[in-house]
Length: 458
Image: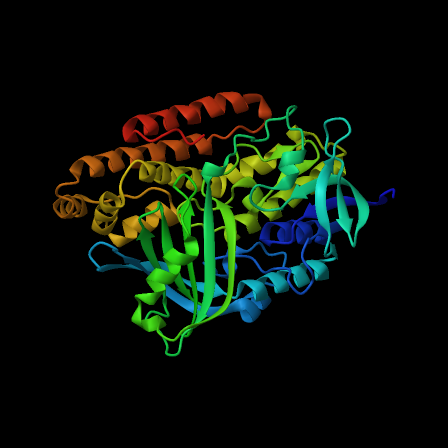
């Protein structure tokens, strides 16, 4: 049966955060936009997620941010983090500089899709995309199946928001561009989460709780409310396979506050724990969100980066379509926006992941629990680097006696993190100087491998 064909200015594949912000931005600018989502209308937006978020200010102003907050933020009073030491049983409390929130991910996803529809984009549910259309190097659309019928979508620009290890990237030929194909399973994390209903309110309903595991990763307990907890676990795929469900259940069974808890739903996923793609553009094609590595590689948080990336991708694509130039160079500004914003922070944080792969859990926990809370937040969250005065340095040295070699190594990695941010600040304005930029960045990375003894990640 020949495929029926429909034509649009932009086709967005995937109805997550990045896809919705891309589609809503383009539709509000007057483009004809189709968003293709493989799930049903009732299930769309249901994604395995830790549910933690900074707040509505994380979102570009192309959707009703107050509506998102009112209808999906179930806990708006997150003021601290709790880092649990699995060795000593002690906890480190880390105050946050701003109040965060925990969301109901399905409710959030549904509101975002409805806002995208209200912006003027067409949403095609139960549409499974299986290939790109690429007759002469430039991507000109995608093929899909809905209700067993083959479909073809023509587009000036295709936005890949299809998530981790996107099938579109397996199908596309990127040999004529700089699109990052240096991607493998070891740069990803396997995650699993359950939503638990507990009989009595937890005492830490204003906190995000983290606990390292012996596999390179961590458990999390994020309170959607005082009695509804998002409980999950992620671990780096560089490690031996483990039964995520069993590790999580064992920890839950040893926590008195979870006695008598019931499981409301459960879900698993893979997510990138790597630096953002060096380049996420090809002629006629842009990748956003998880499909471009736009996830904090230390915490796994991906909502804010995906929202920004989707918005910026659409803005750049709007100009390219208006100019009639859909080349890699015409879309390049998107790369520059990403890499000089959250891209440089995530690239810096990735160095701490590399450092972690070279050390045992006990060493890492000893160092982490000795670091002052705000410096820890800066390193793995807001900045990707941290600063300490002399007094704090002396206290940290005293608390890490016996691990000074590892602490000194971490100090050198932190210096490298500062250097790599400087490199990303000079991300080229066109593909012409891209190779030279990569060489400069890789020089910093080689220093980190030499410092830590870690196996190369890329």
